Amino acid sequence: MIRKMKFFLKNYLGFSNRESRGFILLVPALLLLYAVPVIYNNILAKRNQIDYEIYLEKMDSLESAGWHKVETQYFMSQDTSKRRQPQLNKISFDEADSIVLQIVPGVGPATAGRIIKFRDAIGGMHTSEQLLDVYGMSPEVMERVFEYFEFTPGIKTKININTADVPTLAAHPYINYGSAKVIVAYRDQHGAYTTADDLLKVRIFSQEWIDRIRPYLTY
Image (cartoon, rainbow, N blue to C red; front, side, top):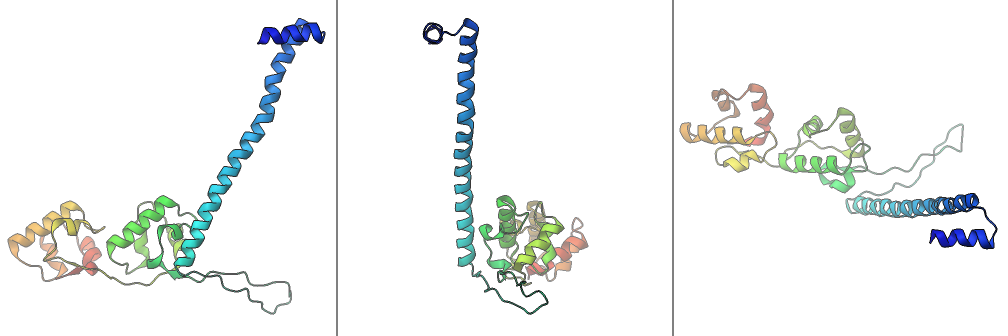
């Protein structure tokens, strides 16, 4: 193919050997310069389409969760051109799903998933600071979460420490599998617990840890 092109350039266009080689090298470079912007624009268009679909999914999730846009209101000031920006009414943190949580700056799919898993497993949060127990959560992101969502303290699900088996206890974020086994073993040997302070009789449990799980226990 290259030989035929050189023959054509030399015999029909009067190119020298050097000019023929230069022209043959120049053609692919020109084609590449043309192709790169086209390929880049196609990739960018596909990425924008994906981002737009994700945006629509988030908006649909917001609407289904009860968010709605507040109508723009005006207020009197020296500069009458100023106006309040549209805002979103807060919804309950307990009602937010993993898609809606991603409207918070700093909360991606992985963090949102961990938040939902923690919230559902713990059975209700009595302080907003408990969100810091989510792996990878920072105080800054925690504050932003509750700027977007309404936090209502309350424990919805408690564990009966006298009837729960090891897997049930270990499913709670504050009780690991080893601690659950010790709780059940001590109960089997010494009888039912009457208060959380009975756990102090087990030397491996600290007062701090017992106070942490106390709100989630029944007897």
